Length: 284
Image 1 (cartoon, rainbow, N blue to C red):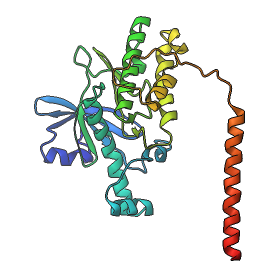
Image 2 (cartoon, one colour):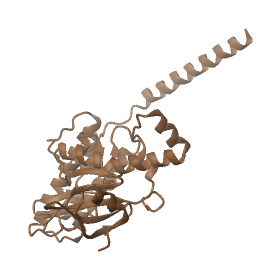
Image 3 (cartoon, rainbow, N blue to C red):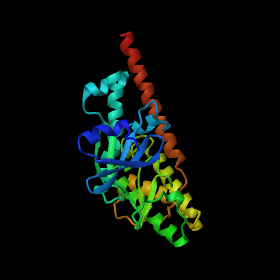
Image 4 (spheres, rainbow, N blue to C red):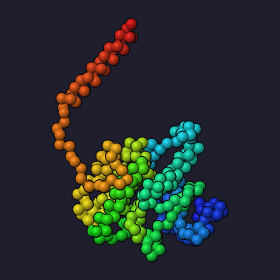
């Protein structure tokens, strides 16, 4: 095939020897199978912002830190330099997440670096050496569905303990090799402690995966892993080795209405006193 323009610099630098073919084209990138020495790897070429169809990207970027104040100001102003910097951060987010999650024991492709908007990473294959299928293309037995669902929930927990939420996890962003599910596609990964949408994104990730595996093992549809995971996380009790039950203790205690009303009354009285002091200061 004709070498894609975006991969030419990597070939010239000796990072890639040959482009074997295109694997897929998605909403934020096109992925190619490439030869690097004796190994076959993936080259993920990120699309420019105008070509991406990823919805609500701003929600995912919330909380991503920019240490350089000049870069931060440029991004706020939306200048060309600022847009370029925003693109660089978007592209580097995935490789950063992959390194962090691999270290945390999450099953993700091994990253080899991001070069000029191209992420080089491990090619996930099946037991016969062919490109591993996506989860949505795999037929599962009830036993396999329960096992793989448990693996994904374990990895969601490990991700959260590492401060990361996938944010777009579904059967389309999971590959299946001979050992089970491998999580992919992380450019939209969010900081669990800095993004206001973190809880809802975690809940959606868990719901997506549970509903998919629940097609093959319906009993999974009754569990409450999202609520259990987030409650443990908020309370500081979540660890990479936490054994989930899928059960959540519901709070059946009635709300203390009197205590709430007293707090409201106290707040109103403080506000009234503050306004009186301000009026007195103006009149004086």
